[in-house]
Amino acid sequence: EEGKTLVLEKEIADSMNLEYQMIMSWITLNAYSSLKAVGLTAAVSSILAKNNISCNIIAAYHHDHIFVPKDDALQAIDLLRKL
Image (cartoon, rainbow, N blue to C red; front, side, top):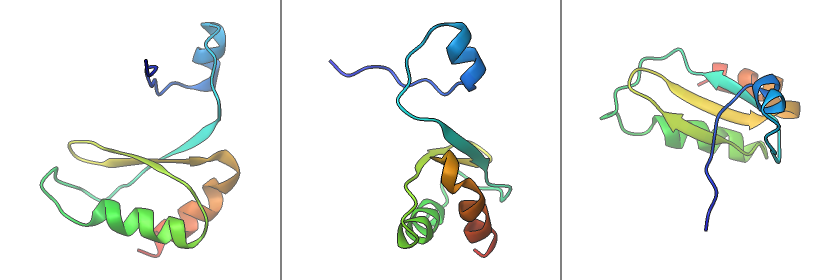
């Protein structure tokens, strides 16, 4: 059985003694994105992949949220600002 995924601040996970595999940085895209919009996720994942940065994306109602490895956060932000 697959486990559940929780998006928590590290301090909260630690206080609850929860195990985690990696620490990610949370980047919220300031661009308004409708759930019906097409292409934003592809553009984001493409530019990050071309620069060898893995990501997980949560598409929300008004904004998308990108999770990247903590060590890659500054580079990811620089790349995303160029979109």
